Amino acid sequence: MYIGKVVGNVVSTIKISHLDGRKLLLVNQLDLQGNETDDYDIAVDVVQAGPGDTVLVIDEGNGARQILHLDPGAIRAVIVGIVDQVALAD
Amino acid sequence: MKFARVIGTVVATRKAEGLEGVKFLVVQLLDERRQPRGDPQIAADATAQAGRGELVFVVGSREAAQALPVVFVPADLAITGIVDEVDDDPELRRRGPTAAWTTSG
Image (cartoon, rainbow over all chains, first blue to last red; front, side, top):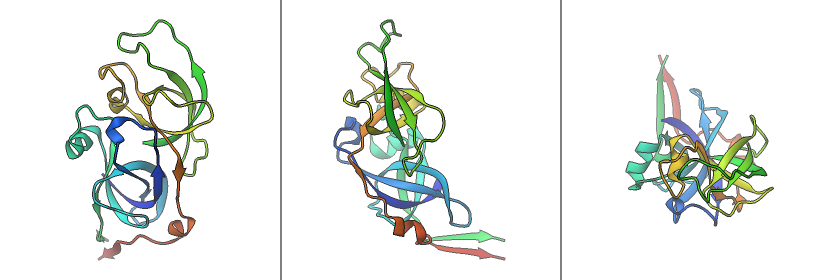
């Protein structure tokens, strides 16, 4: 899993059935200091996240299928939490 | 899933079992700003409607095969949607994270 920042919505009409009715968000991966990296995902949102939010993203197919109750399911990246706080030891 | 641009088509008559009827396209993977990144790859089109020049998104690894009509097939990249619009906000990128970010010590 990684911490990311939602930077926008992705709108798609023609998509596979696994994605029907699901919200897709563009998420940039953050580094340990909270800065954006050049890694990203188009992720399915299950926690009503929105642009600007700091979020927790899982990028693994079995976990995604379990959360979304899909089998088979061609989804890997899912936003599974909105992050309130990150505290690092020095 | 990642952004990709469809840049060509591939025709293969003889294919592995389960891939009959699946369309293959040449895609250029893109970064989050939709600029080319990395080498072009071949993707199976799970939407069956993607065409040359279109902005799409793709899923890789084992999930690619799960997007196709027959689930256990040899495919490691699949087009799972065609992008209508991305409304990313440059202002959001300049702002720091909404979470409180602290280093104790």
